[in-house]
Length: 120
Image (cartoon, rainbow, N blue to C red):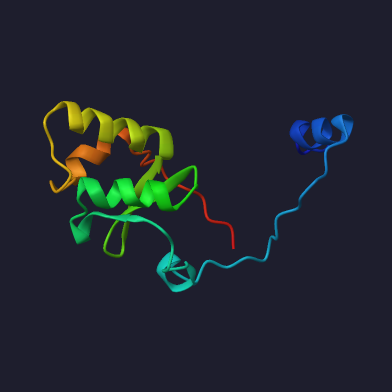
């Protein structure tokens, strides 16, 4: 169908009156994510062995809706604030104390680890 006329998706955008954001076609992907990503983000770094109290303090200090989960330089996924809060409550019910470490295995069930698209 695209050979005969515009894409049906492009036509629908025009018909609905949505702003159309063109993607650059001459983009080259020669940079790695770690070369351009911001490293001073507020994140849960499981390589630093965060404790329950550390994550609770982070939730009190920041109002973000979620946080990246990383292990040193490796991106693991993203956890929503509500799911992280629920995890802490669940760990507390299981008898974890404030000084206990939160493991990657604890975080994985509530972490979205699907691939995220990076647009230059």
